[in-house]
Length: 376
Image 1 (tube, rainbow, N blue to C red):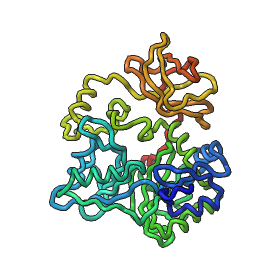
Image 2: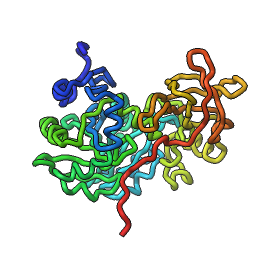
Image 3: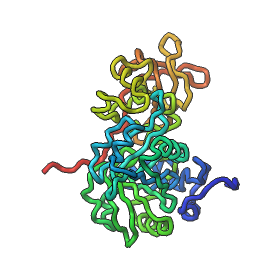
Image 4: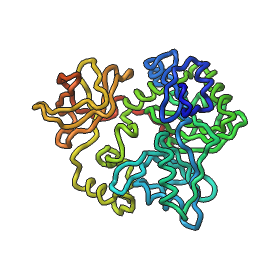
C-alpha cells in the first residue's frame, strides 16, 4: 500500500486497528478481509449483520436549474422511471451510451428540497459518470460532488433492529427509501438498500464523524466488519451484477437480464440513449443472455472460464464465479448464446483445459431477503 496515488477512506486507520488485510481497489486502500476470514464474514452477514466501508463510491446531488423537473431531465440518460419517484424513494438504474451499452449502474433518490436527486455511483466509474452527467445536462442541471461524506453499509437480517437502537426512525422505512436524520447527533442520509441480497442500510456520514458512528455500530455484539471478499461472494449468491465484470459498455440491459430496471413507459416510448437497440431487443430477443451457471462438483469456475455446449462449441464465458458459502458449493454467472439460456440446459466449463459439467440455472442462488412492510 505504498503507492502515493492510492487514496484512503476516513476509516483507514480503523480498518488497520481491526486487523484488516488492505488491498488497492478502484484507487483506494480497502479491506479485503478481517481476521474472521471471508467465509466467516459472509456467513455472519447472512445470519446477523455486517458493516462495510463503501466510502469509495461516488456521491453527488443533482439539482435542476430551471422549471423543468430534474428527474424528467435525468431520464434522458437512463432507461429507468425516475420521474415517477416520490420524495424519499430510490431506484436502481443504468447510464447508457448511444449504442445502448451500460456506462455504469447506479442508485438514484428523489431528494427532499428543491428539485434535487441524490446519486450514488460505482467507485471506478465516478469521475467519468459525473463528467458525463454534467456534459449531457449542461444548462439544465448542476452536479455537486459530495466529497465531505463517507458511506458505510449495515447489511443482514438483524440490521434494522441494530440500527434502530440508535436511530429509531429506520425501523419502519420501506425498502428502497431514504431519509435525512440524526444518528447520535450527527446529520446522516440513511437509505434502506444494499447489495448483499439481505435487508440493510447505507449511511452517508460527514467524514469527521464517520469513525464515531462506525465504532458505535461495531460495538454491538452482533455486528462484524466485512471486507471486499465477502461483499463479492454475497452479491454473487444474490445474483447481482458487478460493473466491469458482468455488465459493461458492450452490454445492453436486455442482454444483462436487467429488463426489470427499464420503466414500463420507457419500454413503450423510449427517449433514452440506445433506445432503438434496447427496444428492438425487447421485441426480438438478443443473441446472448446473462444466466446463472451451476458447476458440478466442488471446483469453482472463475471469471473468463470458457463455456461450451455439449458438442464442444464455445457458447459463452463466465463473468463472475467462486464458492458460495451459504449455497454450499461453487456458483457462477456469465453470458451464453440465447438458444442455450433455458433453465436446466447442460453445458461444460473449460477449467485448466478440461471440460467440467455444469448447467444453466435461474438466479439468484440464495433467496433475496429484502424488507417488505407487513400488510395492514
